[in-house]
Length: 256
Image 1: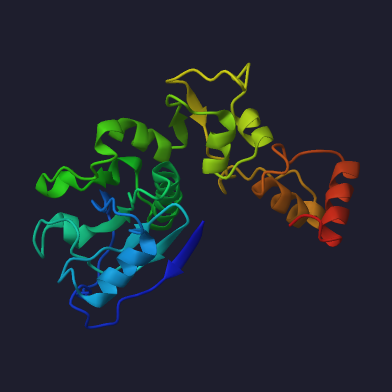
Image 2 (image 1 turned 135 degrees about the horizontal axis):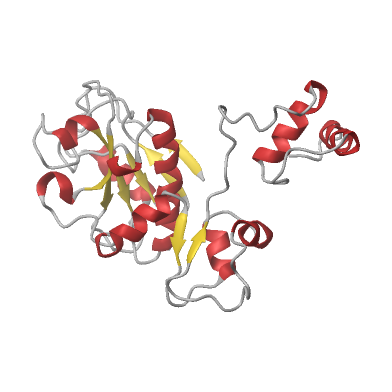
């Protein structure tokens, strides 16, 4: 997913400029279902100053995320006062709900962004919260009715909804059919999903402390790591012929 930076200028009334150590991520919906009310439109709105001091760090639609305020600065998005914990300790993410956009794709794009921020700031899953936590507002209005499923999604688990197909789910989470089937070996018939079925939609990443490449020769480690992280292989261990093949493919620039 594309993440653009369109920072408000220093001194803008919606950019207080106070430094912050992010502890939470606050999820919002824009509350604007009008056609064309996508991330770019909301970024323009914020830059234009029509929202007063209200701002956000990121706004996300079905195509991209736009960052308007650095994540380590305060933004007034939570409605709990200038020194309230929502405004002063959380990153605000607005998810677009424009009627000419794909809400489910916008949500999945927001999930990708949230995962990146969780990793960057070492945040636990329980610190992903709705706007309602801070001031009681019914927001994010499109997600609150299924908040539990949303949190599962952030954790990498998608709950199948009526009308879903495996192909649609794979595209939404930037997987191909082979990848999603590999991640979900309990799927016996890809054409007959059950509503409520839980699917893994997050490709596992190797954790440094596990060192999955410990047995890989140094001369092959770069090529093996590349194929493993890109999901071309699910098991990084093999014989010498396997390693030589991966190194050759890497040198031929096939592993992109």
